Image 1: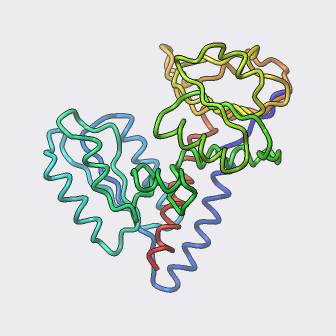
Image 2: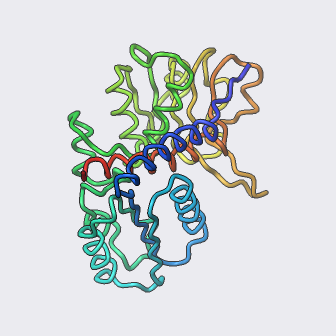
Length: 281
């Protein structure tokens, strides 16, 4: 049978632990602070920002949301980031993506201080992760690793296949699996014989953003499948990259969509912000 890995429940446990650590810091007069910059009125972005704000409130963080107009100019956004880089009550900064077309995404995100880059997207943090130095690990890959470990099955020595090569999920999760001593293969749109690669995998991380691309006949018995995909069907239903129904009664582990990786991403953002606060001390 398919064993669902409950990301929502695990995220709640992690946030409870963060809440306890935050209370201990507050007793010493220190409150972790997270600043989120939202430019424009993208509906999905507004939901993500609300979820982050809610999580901050639940764990006891200081939360500051900066909402800028859709036509905000680069200088305005960069000036705000510079101000937050120097703000001692703020330990983490993130810019909610995507940004309006007139803004240079790379220039703006790279303006964030590496010490406050709790999203883990900056080149400095990515480079440190690659060579095994202290770094803020990107939140979604970090959540994926925690979900794999939740099964109790060791990662070391296993064959892991990552489907997707984005800078946000695919590449960093591959590095992190390698760090855990898995043998890692990265697959993508140009990969030949994807099914063969997947059938050899003990661990699959699906992060392509294509609804039901991976079906039950591509997954072997006993595999751990982490579904990062969030795809909206025409009927409004949210589904992953893995077709859960096609797994039937196959013996494997799977993260559901929704309720799998999504809640863990926010929990790891809280975790990185707490870690940043400790480093600033």
